[in-house]
Each structure stands twice: as structure tokens, then as C-alpha cells.
Length: 178
Length: 154
Image 1: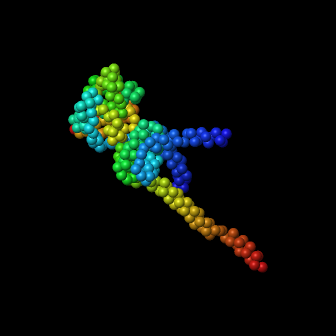
Image 2: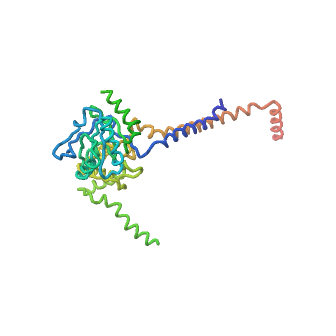
Image 3: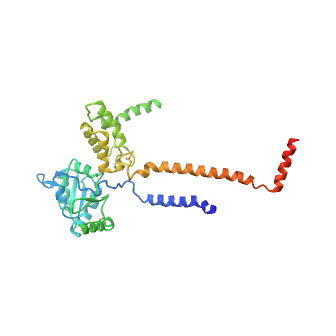
């Protein structure tokens, strides 16, 4: 019994080592969204394409969709743009744009030049909706279910790997629920 | 050299405070509340900077939001709740005590207590082991001991 107790520090060290090693794989710059499980914050903002058309959280309901936070000042948004096109066209998942703290004309030009994957774009010039949603940088991509509830947030670029391992399985799961 | 350093300090210092100084408050109390909260709230984009320190755009947005809320007369708790609702416990350096943070708050105390218990237990074990050993003196030892003692008395 006493002899077994001598191994206690070793066992503890190994346990702590495993926990710390697992911690290494965590990216401290990625925050879990505080909005998971909450309905999308209410908003009333113009469409990017048409300043007179007002959009609200009701427009995001109906289907499981991706809400992509982007801006022309964000280089990573350009990187993920082709994947968004692919998701919207090939995989048929609606991608809703949240144009975040951007200039209207620059954003419109961007969509003409790079093509437009978005079902529609919410023009959030002041970043009001972004703040309510807890956006802390672009790009961010949220999965919003058919009832308009925020289910998941991905911070950073969406690519093939992110789509296959993170977004697609979740979208399928949430679509199956409703 | 020291003089140069102080001149540099005088030039550099005001720039860090400037972002805050452009905001206007109706009372000094509000200004102090703003400064205190801006130091207590953590910038979500930065790893370890409060929103008063950081130049990140999100920190600026949060400062503006803080300013607006203070002008509206919101108290400290309302402001902190507002931030936590949006950005999670990450934004506060002193998270509230609830089910997700009890380990953080109580963990150190529990570990310290555990340490005290271990120390007390091991020291007791040693003490109780002490007299037990002296009782195990062999007959020969006892004879020798009484002999020595009686020699002393002489």
C-alpha cells in the first residue's frame, strides 16, 4: 500500500501532462460564442444592394443557413470567398452575408468582381448587429437553424476542410432536427 | 540619458490616453466610472489587454458602447452583463461566480486546503509513530537504560 502511494506524484504528473498537452492544441484566439443557443439578436438594417429594403431577423429564419460576417477590408474574407461560392452553389446551403463595418460601394464592387454567393446581404455599417452578435473580427461564420437560433460559430477562414469536418456535419444535424 | 527618457515619456504617454479623452462626459463621476470599467473589461480580439489599452477596432467599438451606456446612466453590473451576454466571460477579468466558473474561484482554495490536510496528516503519523518505537525496546536495552539512569543518580 505504502509503495503504491509512492507512485502518486508520478500519476499526478502524467495526468497534468496530458491535460496541458491537450491544452496546446487549443487556439486561445478562438473564443466560444456567448450567443450559442440564443435566437439571433433582433435587428432592422438595410440590404447592401438596396438601401430602401429593410431586413430583420425574420428574414434569416426558415432554413438552416450560414451567416457569414465579411468586409472588403478583410483579407481573409477574400481567401474564403471561393469556398462560400462553392457552398452556396454546389452544396445548396443558403449563405447570408453580414457586411460588417464596410463601405457600400466597395462591397457592391467586390460582389460584382468576385461573384456573389449570398442569398442577401445585411448592411451593418456601424457594426451594431455585429456587436450584438459578439463578432470580434472578420471573417466569422455562424450556423443559424430554421428557427433563427444561433447554433455554432466558426472564427476564421472557411475552407474545404472546415466545411467537411465542422460545418457540413452540423448543418445536416440541425436540418434533421426540424 | 535620463532627461531624454523623460522627454520621450512625456511625448508618448498622452497618445495612449487620447482615444479616451475625445469622449465627453457630463460628470466627473461618469468619467471615473468609464475609466474603471475600461480597465476591467478585456478586449476580445487581444489576448491580454483591456479595452482601455487596446487599439484594436473592436476595443474602440466597445469603448464607444461603454461610453453610450454610461451616459444613459447604466450601472456597472448592467454594463458587465451587456458585455458578457455578447462576448462571454472572456471579456471580464473578474468573472462572476456561477456554475461555469466555480472551479476557477474555488479550485485554488480547495487545493490549498488539500495541502494543509496532507501536511497535518503526515505530521500526525510521524508523531504517533514516535512513541510506538520507544515502546519496542528490547529487554536488553531496558536493562542498559536503567543501568545508565541509576548510575546518574549516584
